[in-house]
Length: 294
Image (tube, rainbow, N blue to C red; front, side, top):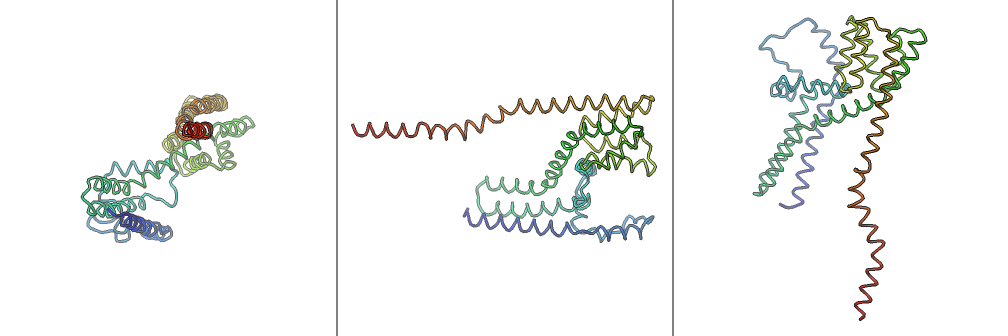
């Protein structure tokens, strides 16, 4: 297949995907809020259609299984539920990007008889459909790593506040107000759950469900048990803060021990050949010149 035709098809597919994403990322929060307030308490009939949802959102709701929707919702929760990517927009973006990938894959499959091109077309289609999942997964992993890094310092702040006379919720509020990372946002949301009427146990368990960091889950379980059995929260915070600092140091030592293995392959394939050429190159040239002169 001609290289210019391949590049042109790729640019067309990327342009279609960009226009589809731009159309779907239009901010309609105000309209949705007004519509929800006006139709609050009204249930849709079984045969009533949702014309305001858009064709891609209706297709996404129809073709996406319920279990997969719950998985996407969990991934959004781990990613912090970014305002620019609600669940409805995600369900609408997946078939749109999948359609763009399918068109480009069809172009690749029909442009030549090579089976590798047909396989590449299928890969492009799958990549277009699952690219939102990959973006969410990456964002969620970065957010959970940030929570792990902030947890030890946050527990130290809460311990100082509790020992100074504040209650546990007051210490959480102080840590949430002074913090700027995702852990501070989760603490503020936990307090908001308590303010709207949820019990303390449900709010703490909801905090554990919104994260995949094992350290934070362990801390939440310790707080729930302390609240159930009447254990002093200052003792729990002191022990948990010490454990988190030890785990953070162990993670740093583990990364430091893995570093030589990660550096080995760049050394073998990129740095050592250049050194050999720089060191042995002049000697090899002189040797070749000497032997050719004889």
